Image (cartoon, rainbow, N blue to C red):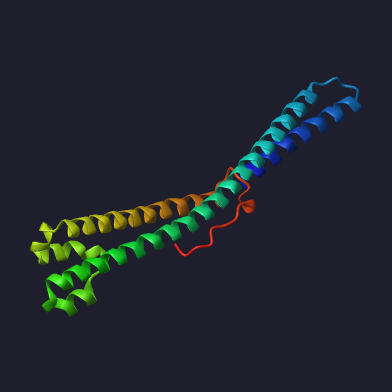
Length: 179
């Protein structure tokens, strides 16, 4: 909104210069006020056109970021479901090796707590299958957390674009999310 006010003020200065020029011309005085009118009008029009272009670019980025958030949601769901599947495989392996702890293992295991089970059952560290499963779960969890960081950056950009003084932010769609 600031840029719109600035452009209007400069265009008004151009209009006042032109009015002053006309007033002096009517009185019969020769004046250079027309140069000021031309310069201020040109600068005001350039600022207005540049801000419209910047606003349309901001609008485009806002739509792009909204679609990026949808993609991040899908990725997070995929990473969570994959890590849960791998955690169930891990729990199944634990059930084969440690059947006496069946209820404890099956009900409490979560993807972000797999390392605790490696500490609790150190014999598992020797199994290549378990090592690969744990590494895959760690990778998926890291990817999930990276998507959360990407989500936060994208939301920050979307909120800023709605308040940017150099854009016509009333034309930019607002972020309507919970975070």
